[in-house]
Image (tube, rainbow, N blue to C red):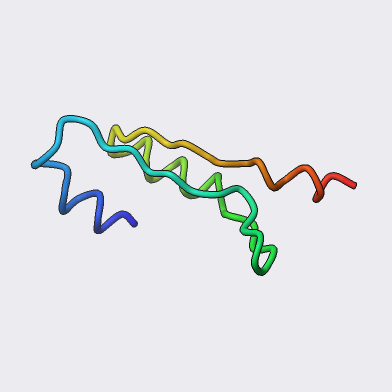
Length: 58
């Protein structure tokens, strides 16, 4: 992800990274702290789709 952000950084004014908090197919939980650190360090926005996380709370 960091390599991709670096590659596109000069071509776009705004970069937004969109991830899911929990992937429904396999239950993989995104490493959001690490992702936030990378996006923040490059001035990119981070959007997390967390709609499927409700079932993980129980």
